[in-house]
Image 1 (cartoon, rainbow, N blue to C red):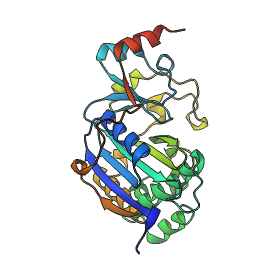
Image 2 (cartoon, rainbow, N blue to C red):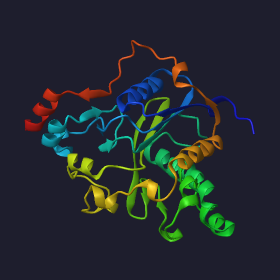
Image 3 (cartoon, rainbow, N blue to C red):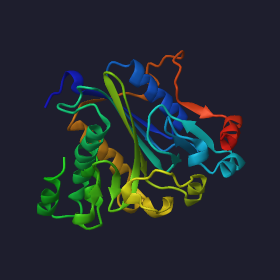
Image 4 (cartoon, one colour):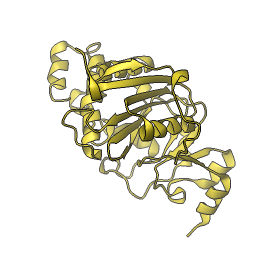
Length: 284
């Protein structure tokens, strides 16, 4: 089926691009482009901490260990929480016109609901047929709407306890991805960091935040997160995510070298310098 107008989307697939560079590109595309984009980056080249635009380092980070180990801390241009990313993180960013998805209101909860019940669902259902009978998959998928369809093909947990994706990306009661959003007058970006794998030692850089979602309760970072590698192959997840997007948009693959970026663009996403972190650590 042909798709025209606001339903066109450019797809860029990357591997190991530094997360700071990725965020700069996404911010420029959000501010200056006239077409929809999906950016998929399979891992980043070195560990880094990424914070939301309003994040307060002294409340969210163990700044002593961060400074001792020379971990980069990045304040991105979107909202959202604080995460440690590395080669085990799979990043997917959707940059869309406000009318790119028919009937979707350009507000945080509707966008999250669409991505969870539409894109994630569509992705997971495509994978579920490998492990479950068609009737079982159909019964479950009928109640869902891009990412769910990917994971269900490799699910090993009960259907009744599989996915909770209205506001968070969760398998049962364990989070498998962190999301962030930014909404402008005519555009929105929905950005997800999927926890394919992670080094447990990196969790020591994060404080327990003051505000947490209800499902987290008092659990620490290791207790309320899970690794996607325990449920599905990495390349399959990425490929099925792209396939799910193809059911929503007419995709055109763009090579990274072909991106027309403006060297004069000044992003608000920034790397926090050591002296800034030291100052923030002791600010009242």
